[in-house]
Length: 407
Image (tube, rainbow, N blue to C red):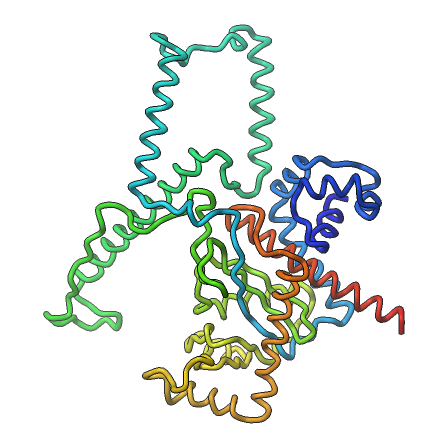
């Protein structure tokens, strides 16, 4: 019942647990789905959090239903990304110094509160409820229930308390700096062997200047949603995610993933591979006939690997704003794809790209009103995005069945 309730709510563009709770009281359709039950918003939110991975897999099940209905034709597949705002403000981006200062201020506030509360006492004495065997047993039962709930969670959600999020943000920045230091040490050990990638000896002038890590981790991190990034959208930069999707000619979404890097460069192979996994799980053994993407996805190595795997790729090497090719972008694969795009067949194929994939994003953002994620963390956002695309496919399947009944 809860899954059906969530799918119907997402199909209507409603993702707020409080709005779903209110609809279960006021809306007849919601009341029918919920069998006149009235789950409160906390129950709905906990259900989504507890079954996060399982709900993400609903996308594959819906795709399987579309495949059985004959809606999944993969002769032409379009890939693109859309920037979607996170449940975080760009003003929450802070650097390492500010993180450390806030943690120290919080520690001083805790010390002052403990001094006022405990006085001269140590503060870790047993509480009264643990002084008797009956009290200890009750406490242990509550602790075991809490531990079971924690183990049932398949992914750790973003903390609600700001102090915890700040500490986690600092830990991530420290981890990033330590990773750079370890990588540099490994690289220096490799260079000390005196061989290049081909096994040949390095010349005396080929040793680069050693990397000196910064004293403090550079950059900024968001204390509300540490997984989110500043990404460039259509109307400027926003705090959010790069939501990737692949769709067929009849606008059935066959892949829905989340990236945290703003440019689409490098995401082509990952998205196509995800689409192939989803298609195989749905029982579709046919490979995509051709993959269409805009110039932001151009990656020569990935294009050659996909083409070698039997999946032709058609991407414009030059963006529409350029009148001349970029320096060095000529000859070989560049001129070959320019020649294909200049043919009538190539033009007809590539003209389908915008209609296929941009219509999916336009319907999602403008018609269904889904412009911002409600949850925090990449795993949670991925589930939300996959549910959004799954309900998009459900609406397509519903219209297809209605058309069949009318015919």
